[in-house]
Length: 604
Image 1 (cartoon, one colour):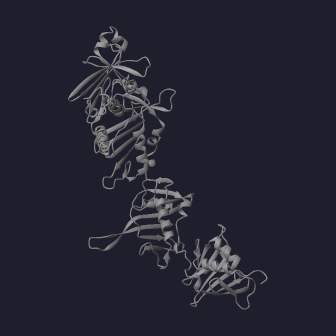
Image 2 (image 1 turned 180 degrees about the vertical axis):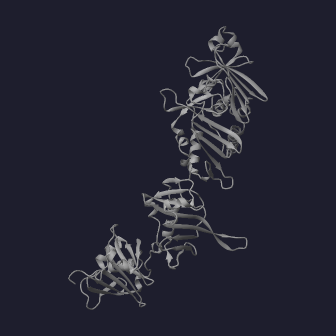
Image 3 (image 1 turned 45 degrees about the vertical axis):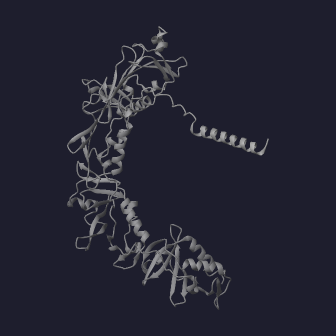
């Protein structure tokens, strides 16, 4: 074979290969479509009516209709339906595909086919679906021999089908399977007034449109417990019917305790009643259940009684348990006590104590505001209090008073202080574990625990900034230690380089001294306990107390003195600031290092 013939055959082979590839890529037959849906015209979201006729002659027809987007049972009883269950059935039917199709000829060839397939009027369940442009009736017959499929027929069409038996689990056998078991379904904003009748007592809660907060309006106006109201309504929304007892409009309500129900909860939007629930007695030998009904509806049902406990409580349980809720920033605090003082916010997070003029510790101020806003009311003592009543609670001349203010800028651009809360605290001679308190904008007297009251400052020195001083260790020229009538001086010659001054004896640890002095140069009090020379003896300070003076290169000095041990096992320490003696509890770890490295050893 010559070269020319060889090239000819190669070209033919390449052309055939290209043809095969192109034909396979673009001309291959398309895959067959999946099995056809049984009800191609059915649209689940368009169905407006659904009727179920269970098999047999004694079964009641179940009829559900979509009304304003929600499903309602109309037969055999008028009652809200479980929309989720109906939606599940419709979605299943919309996508239903037959596993097997039985032709009309096959059915005609079997004279007893309808009986065998369970498709007679007595055997089959009937399902009628209606939408504006389509109506279809299905007959659901018997299960196939294995039991995992069921025979089904479309009325008006010849033949039958075999589909998955899961369909039977979605079709109700009685109306109770589709009845809505929730007892309350109100959307947020659907009501703004809740009236609770608890025996002979009635209280009302009203939602303030401006603030979005609930308030107690009956038996008297008061702040309300927002979380408790929200949680109690959520419990009602989640409460489910345990059993449906009666749908008879003429039923005697007395045996169920519903003639004069001990608990009734009504929801209104303005003057319009949007929902009301009544709860009566418990069924015999079933104390965990209680009879209930919707006001204006004949149905009587049972629900669990425990979730209703919150609604059976006193109206005081729905009052705000906090003495004050700070929703606006606090810019100033006035404290009226034996030593009156005030706190004023400066730039940023800086506060100043007046009239003394020293800086306040920002952490202590935050703690004070947090304590005030977190004060829990331990007891609602008296609801209507007049001036003559105040001495009995120690409130005619309050033991302490806190006025919280915020600054507001007016139209002219001027800032003025607005009172957020004015709290008066008093004590009674016959109640040692309670401190009485009232807000000047309310007529009530409350009580808080003594422990909570003792967390509030009584004197300005308690809020002073806890940092004693702040300088670098490199600025320290020497350390003078006085202890038990002896003196020791340590000189700072450079980084990590310390030596005993002439006349001082013993051994020193340069690195340990460096780190201890570094920490002492930026030390803070753990807590202030007193201010004034008169308190020296009370806290264990003597003429021989352990004293340390840091002599700075600038010529200034910083002296700290240690006294007795506090109940917290911290050591008392004293420093002189702004010409006054300040006594505090000193951090234990730093004091441990001071004892180890900045003391005069015995015998030296």
